[in-house]
Image (cartoon, rainbow, N blue to C red):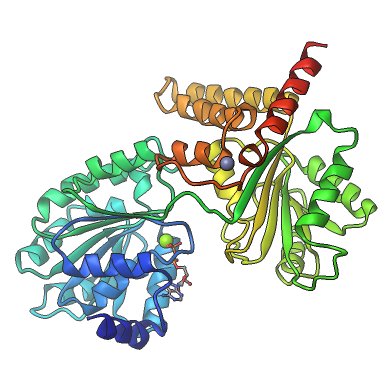
Length: 442
Ligand code: ADP
Ligand code: MG
Ligand code: ZN
């Protein structure tokens, strides 16, 4: 089976190998088809293929739910380029094209392999009979729910229409369901399983722990000159001046535009060319900075968090947070842009209690604003605050940083083996905390 599966991967998608053992295992489990499947892998890990390859090999049609027409369009275009019959029925589709698709779906042997729809379409009365009909004729191979965290109110991307998918499942008996997401702390995972009514799903989750990332926390206010400190960190992380020619690069995250400008200026003055990236720049300048960084012409980019989404660069040797991230989940994602090539990389937060107060204020203000707009409080309002508190205790605690992250995501305790400041030198971490405590009482 493995050889024919690899052959199919090559023939239909042009890939020589699976991206990972996990990707291969998911594909096999989906093809077996006897259980529902839950997949949590990071962005870029190749989740789409987990249903696209089984879809191509199956007799019938795979129904894919995805939250945005733009995401759907990208995938459908890509599949069409590969000569895989795929299309989407959505509110923007001209009536004529829609009729053609429905005619194919109604025929005795439809040509379509993948049908993408947004969750609001699922509930549309004009479309429901078509689905039920396909199902009763045994022509639905799989139901794939992409970005499945949208079903959870705990997630950052909640979409009420996703809640209708539970009922959809009930109307499609016997069709195995595959749920996919990149972000799923334990409570979100549980929501997905319950809402989509997954039955004892086989679960495939990329472990949270990445042993090539070294985490540490530095209290900024204790430093005589924070910029000199950051500069030294960067020089070491990029092995500048060591004669090594393995050219890596890095990201410094700041909360504000002014922060980006200042840090970039100071680093450049100290001898490492660094460029700012934030929403205050003209779009063209922003693209240019990003390209220079992507091409390795500028090694250090100093950016607000708007930078990095969809950026997939392998040799990021460090990610430094000059300001505190807004939650531990965001911090994991942002710092996780380091070391995608698997080589040792550093993730550092420059912590400052003053920064904490500011963030705390901003988050509460945002929550209040949302409540006023809505006219009521919600359970999820608390999430923003507790997720931030998790970020703060990550910085302020005496304990393994990796263990804290793994626990937050509901993963088992990892074997850090010196991949964080605490595990390397717990006394130094304690000493720093004690010095910070005396500073704050002065
Ligand atoms: P995700 O949904 O997990 O973020 P995608 O499905 O969008 O990831 O895939 C990310 C990229 O990886 C795509 O460009 C895809 O073509 C590529 N990819 C997926 N599987 C493989 C593979 N086996 N070999 C090489 N590239 C792959
Ligand atoms: Mg995806
Ligand atoms: Zn540790």
